[in-house]
Image (cartoon, rainbow, N blue to C red; front, top):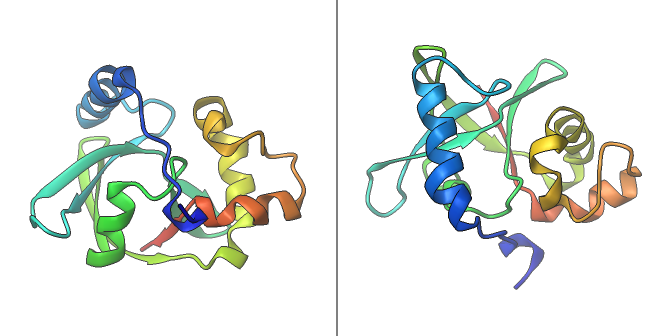
Length: 148
């Protein structure tokens, strides 16, 4: 498996308890620490798929980072090029552009400053205080999309 195919499979608790709980709370307007529900059309089925995400505002842009790697939502986003974010009682449509690997380190650092408490286990010991080289080394394993 190449680093571009990197994926950390969520456990039973995450799939059956945590993600549905976060998605449910977010949908009714009680997001946990700014989480949202990402809705992306399936690349094969065309049906809307939902998953909780942690959007990041950074240097005037908004980003979605894939802490678990090349997930199904990442694969769908690469094909359909956009989706919707739900939360705070509203749904926002967006288009998405994948960020090149060389440009990911500062975004990964900002994401880890904000979200390491929740997603740090997926970054193999790399954190917000890691060097630019270490962040660049893991960048291929964590796709990032700029959303507008």
